[in-house]
Image (cartoon, rainbow over all chains, first blue to last red; front, side, top):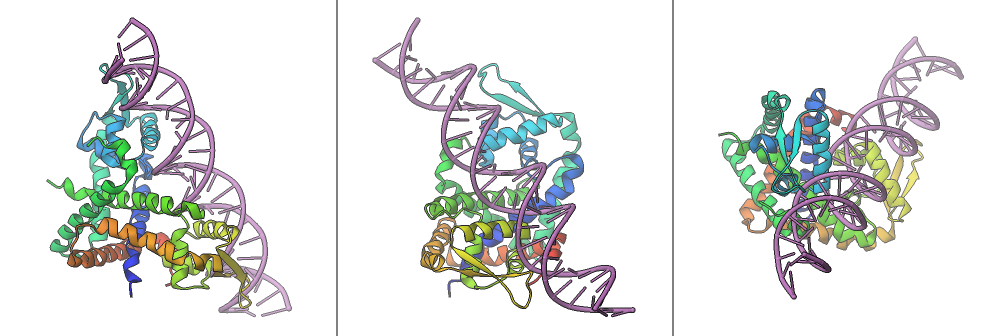
Length: 152
Length: 152
DNA sequence: TGATAATCGTTGCACTTGCCACTATCGACT
DNA sequence: AGTCGATAGTGGCAAGTGCAACGATTATCA
């Protein structure tokens, strides 16, 4: 009787994994893996953040953030400069190379969204985002690990 | 203007990763990692499946499935016996050890669901599942990789 | 000021996951 | 029966992710 209700995490898992595959596939010709686009997009939204701020905003471990940004820097999509006010931290900036592919990266996400939104009414789409946001917020609020990166 | 709409994948990513963390944390005393509970649960629902059927049902790569089941077998939660009718494939069975923790495993998932459902009305919860299911189905239908495991 | 705690970032480790190549077996077809 | 393609499962590789330990810098405070 309660069986079907247990499958939310299965759908979430599927959506996450398939999304990673789709994005990775569409961006691999730019040498951007599924672990990096999320940082690019965050920086498209606001440039010059520190790694800690990125970790807090995306709720991603700072070690993971460091690795992703290191790779993005090696590929020339990003450059990091030490802050004068605090030499422990960087400011992460997008390069021209990153700005050049901005629309392409965004359109990949938009395409993926279109795929999973297929057959949903406008109303349902709005609701989907709203509900996901609520659930995501719940998840983030619960998680103790989040205390470490709580700089929003 | 279209910025906020792009964040679905971010919520999905967050929900997936935090769910993995939560489940991993709650089950680590049983030596069950976040990569294994999903298989246990599938087997709780239907025992004796082959690895290929599990892969197809969960839409998970068969290599990943093989590794997860190998580990579950080493830990004594599962045993695999070759089918007579087809010696290439196994039947995967739960052991008593796995059945013994069935309710615990399920309650962890139920707890996680309760956490992310917090503040949602019954109606919204139903809708959440329905919409996730639609989006998941869309994702699964699109993905070409899925052709390889399409045994549902 | 000097000692101690907190913070930003890096690195190593373990685990999950997907992809690909490979083996063994099965099925279909001549 | 013999051959060849398809299928189930394995193992190696690479990438993403979280965690914990660490170094460097900054902040706190006695």
